[in-house]
Image 1 (spheres, helix red, strand yellow):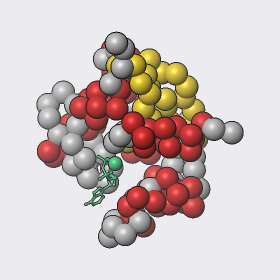
Image 2: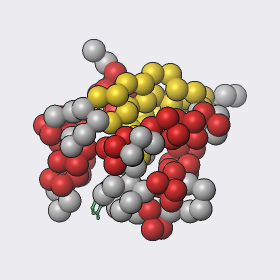
Image 3: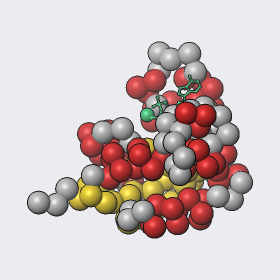
Image 4: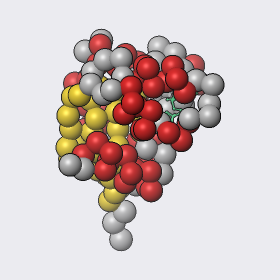
Length: 136
Ligand code: IDP
Ligand code: MG
């Protein structure tokens, strides 16, 4: 039985700013992800606050939301078998310092906040996050 599923990926401002978006998209494609939909946008801080609401009690919440809304981002719906886990693996650990060799965050991440990519952490959250950016 196929487990083909969708996840939400974001190429964050630090990577878009360095013109890495095409390179990162190629990494997803060469790892078997199909880009179902994508758009380059800039969001308001209030939208970032809504998107990251799960982190609202964390000390880094304000900086995180300011950062995600600081410049253009590329949001994508990615599809592949077990895409949520597959994307998390390809992204690497939240802190690029801890990310495994060959992962996107190891290759491009600058710091724990400027870690180049976001990926949904569960199938349930993937649906919520895809709706957040692509339901109109
Ligand atoms: P994830 O992006 O790997 O899923 P989360 O724990 O969901 O990591 O955190 C969301 C984002 O918040 C991270 O990607 C990172 O940019 C930022 N973040 C997480 N922990 C810290 C921290 O301790 N200091 C600063 N920023 C953090
Ligand atoms: Mg997360």
